[in-house]
Length: 478
Ligand code: AMP
Image 1 (cartoon, rainbow, N blue to C red):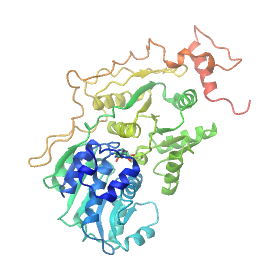
Image 2 (tube, rainbow, N blue to C red):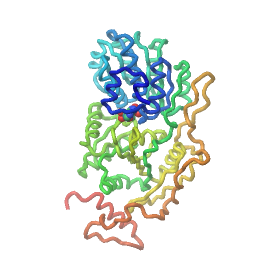
Image 3 (cartoon, rainbow, N blue to C red):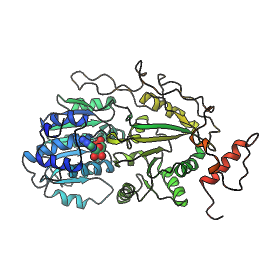
Image 4 (cartoon, rainbow, N blue to C red):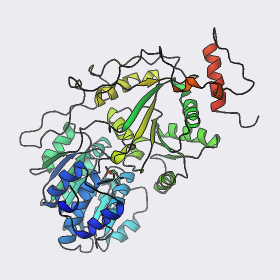
């Protein structure tokens, strides 16, 4: 199938041609005809599936052919949970709409509102916004929704997670009832189903790939270690494995800053992206990372939502996320649009329940490794098989759809893997890794000259650890 056969207008086909998109992805094949026909849509599509073009292309098509915007007007509103995703989606509209005569804008908090107000004066065909700032603009009379024809909710699950439910209700109340509504969500917990039941009229259901499934092109690995060893282990791996561009996730803003501080002390080009950073600094960090001016970008989950970094080879979870679905989003930053990628999680004993919850969600037991010198003193217990449902942090599995509501979208989290389903080998017994991991084949290279290594007997492990750490973090001045 080609984009031309989807009946998109020539200026859009030209932009796609320039971008080198040869054929529509599965979500685009399903969504484009439905949106062009003016239908409501309920789409289970994770990032990396091409979902943005799935709604942007047909909307650009319709907006170009159907009328023009008036001052203060907004014809298509896209709501996104975070500034980064809003920027991302706005960038996509500009990219795909490079040859159509439409006006695009983006609005989010944390930056001055005036430029956004000014941009709205002539009206916008497409406004991408976070809910809070949108309401501020509306209350100031900076825009009107009288011309609104389409509402898109992007990453709707995340908007609810971030506490936007009341803001969303206020936005819905301000919009014309006669409109097209498209809802995109990676997961479909009950609250999303309820929202869909309320907002969507006879929606077309689109499912790009099984929800909660990690992209098959991402090679996943767990490296067990102690909590306190994680920063040094990361540094060691960065050097040892020659990682050139790596996106790292840490649990807290403080954790992000600490890791960035450590890396910078070691002369590594690292930057942070989290909610405490002003928006311009976040965008700059992202731009520098994309240009590979920065080698390591360390982020929290919220800030990283929606990041699209072409060809990103590696994501490292310095800490596991407390909500299992976030694992899928995190590792979805790599392996996008069919490219291969790697996702490595550093896991300490106190994270075993989080690991179990992730494995239940993705229906895989992740392969484990240990790195010599960084083995866990506090063993990370085996998570067993994924058929054992965990009580930990997965969100509630989706319930039955409401009568008359949209069809179920979600492969239920927490169900055992289907019989015959391909699962990787069970984890090796915790702490007892029979096989030497990759590094073990070349230990000599890592031991600095003059270091005495106790090869066996009491103290062997801690001495080896100290030796490896000395290499991971050489003293700045010797
Ligand atoms: P998304 O899931 O919308 O965030 O898109 C993921 C990535 O896939 C983005 O970098 C897009 O530019 C790219 N992409 C989207 N559609 C296509 C396509 N049909 N062919 C090639 N790349 C695409």
